[in-house]
Each structure stands twice: as structure tokens, then as C-alpha cells.
Image (cartoon, rainbow, N blue to C red):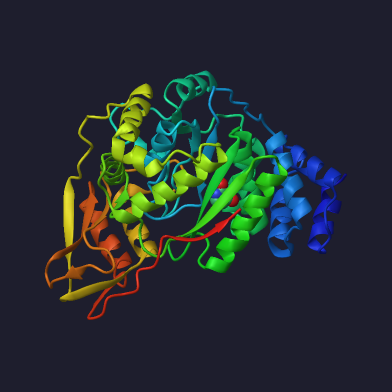
Length: 422
Ligand code: URA
């Protein structure tokens, strides 16, 4: 095969053969296909799409660009992936909860870029906690504790690593075939025997509409099944931030309160709903995750998981140098709180990064003191903006200019899980 022929075939709306896909992904990984050629091919895929058999093969080729872990840890392995949202700290309570229920959760995670936070950035606000583990450490911790949340090891889907960076700078990220193959190549390579996907829909998500989220979710589920990894997707609402905390340390604190039996109702209900799906894939559907959460066992597993990675689960979390309070402009009911605006505000306060190599502030973020449906009185604190760099406050306030409304009537607050796709 020749790169130009493959680019031309896709540019003209053709279907790539298995041999063409295998070759181009491998040749790109090894630098034989040039960046500009892959950029052209990514744009052709973006514009022309791929049929299911191409998406399946493309995912397989990206998995084959590196190693596929085989985790044998004495319990069924099952993982969760979220397409990213605002205040989405669900992995933090979920991984120890599912482990406490008897499965093993290998959660290889990423860092945040843009307005959605990264799980590793959040956990790094815990003093001493370490994201980088060797494969031996991952396996040992999965056997002993049952849950690992750590950075992806080097050799997983290197083709995706290269291609994702290229897509980021060529405006070819928002393509369902490319997103789906990117997510699934990493998750399948990680070696879990079952996978639950939390596909977010709404202002704070990649997919703004439920229809787009449904298309992505079905594509992800078919790739998983076709590769022998039973996969279930929940489509969940991301128009309002999840929980009350958006940022790094503030999200860890909220996750801990969930593990200790408290926490916001939406976080608890989504954690339990995802746990049920994971346990069902792991053959443990007789275990009730709500009861295990209430028993305190999930919190004990959390403490062991953090300690195993060098963290001190009882150490105080970092606090911000500066807190700016946004008061309610009127009395009434909070009728909307826009996830995207709150995500951008938290990001500007220092919780996220503008470039991959930037550091994040552990203590930065936004606390939502009221959620839609709550009664508020004029002048009462509505949002707390946390930052170490007070210069960032005006930018965060600008992002929040149209973020919420207070009105006389209570909004319809719908369920968090919108659909399940198996
Ligand atoms: N997350 C990924 O891992 N890949 C994408 O392409 C988009 C989101």
C-alpha cells in the first residue's frame, strides 16, 4: 500500500480495506507515513466517516501498535471510562466501591485538557500520591487492594497517542469514528474483561445532544463486543455540573464524603448506577453496591488504594490562597447552572491547563453551594471560586456571566442516567 492512495480513497468516500488500515496505522506509528499524510487522512476520515468494519479494524490496528495487557489477578476485571464532564469525579468513589464488591478495577486514566478535569490531576492533590506505576505494581495492587487508578503505561496504543496529538492541532478531534477508536483502543489494550462507558451528553460534554451521545455510545459498545470485551454504555446528563465540587482537591473531598456515606445525591446515584453495570459484567450482580457503600467497606478500600500509591488518605487537602464568593442576584429558585460555564471558570482559576505541559493548582476550582431546584435568597453565597492566583478571578467571573438563572419557578430536574445501551 501507498499512503497517497489510501488518502485519496478516503478523500473520495471509499471504504478502506483491512490491509490498508493495518498498514497505514503501523507505518504511521513507525514514522514511515509522515505527519502531513496522516493529517490529510484524519481530515478525510473526519469528513467522510468510516463504516463499522473500518472502525473495528482501525481500533484493532491501534491496539496492535502496542501491547495488550493480560491481567490475571484472581478476580474478574472490569473498568469504566467517561467521555469527560464537569465535576466528574465518579472514578474516585467508583473504583474502590466496585473493588469492595469483589471485582478488580484497573483504571488507567488521563490528565485534563480544556474545561474537563483529569482524574490523575485530582488525585495528585493528595499529599504523596503517585500516578506512575509499573506493570508489576499495577498487577500487585489489583490482587491485594482490587483497585488501581494510575497513569497509562507507556506501551498502550502508541498509535493513538501520536494520532490524538495530531488531531488536537488539525481540528479533527470531533469525529465519532476517530473518538470511538481512540477511546476503545486504549481501554481494550488495558486488558479489562468488561467495560462500562459513561457517555456524557450536554453543554459540559463533548457530545452536546443525546442523539450524538447515542451514536457515539452505540459505536463504542459495538467496538467492545466485536473485540470480545463485553461493553455497556450509560448516557448521562452533563448540562449541570456533577455534584457541587469542580476542580482538583475539592473533588477529592467530595468523593471522600460519598465514600463516607454522604455527598451529593447525583454523585451517589451515578456511582451506584455505574457500579451495578460493572458488577453485572463481572458476574457479581447479586452484590448490592448501595449496601457496600453504606457499610464503609468502600471507604476502607479507598484508604488502602491511596496508601498503596504513596498517598496519605488522612492528610489535609490543599486549601486555596484566595476564595471569591459569588452571591445570588435575587431571591427565588436556582433554575439553571451551566456545566460548560462552570467548567471554564474552574479551568481559568487554575484547576485545568491551557497546554499539556502546564501544571495545575491542586486547590483551584468552583464550589456550587446551590444546585438547580434549590431555593436561594438575594445576597446568599451561590458559588465559591477557589484559586491561588487572584488575577484569575475576573476571567472566571466573565465565564460565569450567563451561567445561572434565579427565577420564581422550580426547574424540572430530570434523572442523571438518560439511557442504557448494551
Ligand atoms: N478521548 C479520547 O481518548 N480520545 C478521543 O478521541 C476523544 C476523547
